[in-house]
Image (cartoon, rainbow, N blue to C red; front, side):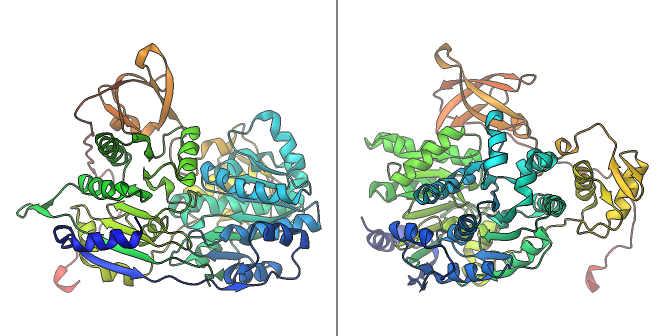
Length: 586
């Protein structure tokens, strides 16, 4: 059933259509194309033409021209607009012209790096010029690491591995860092707050090591739509950037609908269940084989929605595995299986947390549902963009919950469509973060008098660390004196790296089905909890804190568990107290 037909059905159904607070039509847009620049290697152009890419989009051509002129570039265009080619082309061209040229790609997650590597592998294999491309992360076997360091032209990794496993061992990467020409940072809009502030300091350390080995890499960044992509890139990298946002990729028409569930208790302002309303919508779409993605705000909502939809499929005689859940905590091989099923069209519906908000290639979906406002304008557009990639018509439906923010957005659609996305804010000079990374940088290389680290606070921090006995100053050089490995003491994401594994003991066989971050264990997999995994119910019957294992058994019950947590704030110290604000004159 075409998208247009189902839209007409929704309009005709008065009981439903009366609860749509807005119905926007975003028209299709034709592509704007340009020829390949003459300086790109003919062999590379030939391979691209064989793959069906005969011309560049206008933004790709603009980015290539800036990169050619040694400018740092940040590319801001919608999902599936060909941002990847903006960096793959100059990187591969550089290696074809100089086999010593090196590049490092930074992705925020392993899943995204694996996904992007597939596309890169296809190009490299077709070229057949001996270009070596490798992933280097925590899963890379020790036996392969030496070969990657010596032979890798393009190393694909993440900020955590760069911080923990590459920069502290830079002496093993001498040739790589000495010839590093490009640093690619994808999904740079993700790096906000603490994570972004950490990354900015990791980049300071990277640039310092590159200077030591005689290289000065160029930076290419890609971002979703935010208010300040250029400013964010400049803060993270510490250099000037050029913004490329003249999107030339074709876009299919999109229908963006705002739906507010009916009120069932006017006095309390309670509306129909968000989960049940979304499930009802999606079931209707699945009846007509419309491939759909549903974004939920939490892991629990993701699982409950998946369970409801699987039950619906079972009742209608369809295979329940055409709907799958997707979230953090699923094992990597399961996530890859789901991604492939979506891309191949075998999976008709996926319920996900924001884990699929990033640019992992899951094919061209027809519809997107958001079960609750995602929290920011930027995330909402990013999620809506997962449907209707490139040319086909698509539907995005935001279904509001009863919470005040959802109700404001759903009842003020002009605010949403008229406002620019939020800014991403970081503070690389936050003292706690800065001191931690100066410790790491001192471990990597001694600091010299007058050295630049991108901050005016460097000298003060070095003197502080000297007083603490961590550094020792000899002839205006600060040397690392401690026996600790400082990188191990820092988590870039300010989250525990310790995960519990969840083991299915049904039928007396132990099988790991998922994992859970330590902070979530007390509220999600305590003894007696019902743990939901791909819509299936598991009762947690044993929690082994010492070995970080949770034992579960498959059950069939008519309830699920959700812990109530409570936050209490207590004033421990008062550092300063001012006069009370007079609200009449505020």
